[in-house]
Length: 410
Image 1 (cartoon, rainbow, N blue to C red):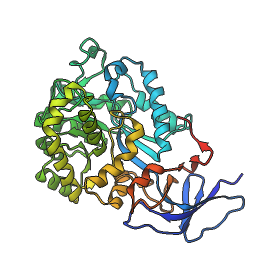
Image 2 (cartoon, rainbow, N blue to C red):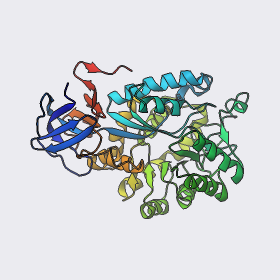
Image 3 (cartoon, rainbow, N blue to C red):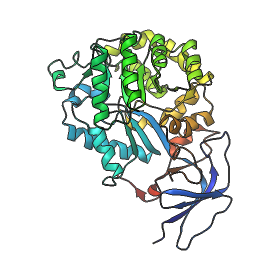
Image 4 (cartoon, rainbow, N blue to C red):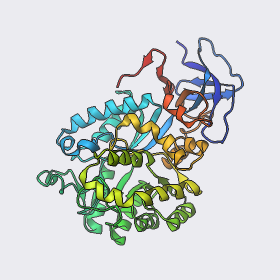
């Protein structure tokens, strides 16, 4: 059987530019894009797939998910076994790939074990089918910070659910432990959050030397750092320490954005999560510990999102799925455009810019030599970004997972 596939594309978004190209054809050999052009070679036995009524794009990349967290049932889910979390995460990852997300960065769970790394390794080894995973196994903060679960489950936290540290030496030990188990990323929190107990997103929870210790240990080990941050000063503290990505940036100010522009750091604003929280607030279903904080901060969160949209900073797509249903993560493209990004910039945020954040040059764009991670959707996403929610063709590494009657189960 031939390992060659030819895609006939009505339009093509290459992940790099501002316009659609096409009609075009793509030749795929094994797991790699071999050629793109108005017409390509047809190797003997090649399978030809007609996508002439669709726009073809690189596989989408979500740089902020939690496959092993259930944010709306956190206390109950934390009691689940590590194996149970891994199996549930596999199901979520596969279902999310149906919507076009062929690469995910998982940013931590509350568990003493390593379900994210186990799932990543099984997928990489070909034992399981699923999206490409980059994993920060656990979340590190100070006691009383966003990773400290003792306010919710004090009787369980001694079992290792929380990864807390309260001195530079303890912080370095936590970072080294993550590295020893094979972490792709270090995830830390330097402000409080909305859904957690006893902390406040508007307050910085790391001292300067603590944030520097976390980043320096990770940098020495060659592992990039992702920082959950809210307060404007927290954003600036993370940037001063050399964080590669800032998650949420709820209250980032103009100075913080200028610092991000100058440093080349990536901002991951998780805008759909804000819309989900707004809907829950209106429906009186937002968890009680979040209501006062979110009500106070919402106007400034929305202003900060507009600041980021108006900036020249690197904006990467991340959703925080797991804290809300994965079925709604695909709406992040629409949320980004509603906040002021152009459709092309939003699409790049979920393709080439996200790949740059992950330091990968083999994904995120449709170019010869890159991995054949490819999605297709009806319509023109530059004219109507909502068509990104209608993906009906998904290829990951040259293997088709969704098209017609072929649909990978969740």
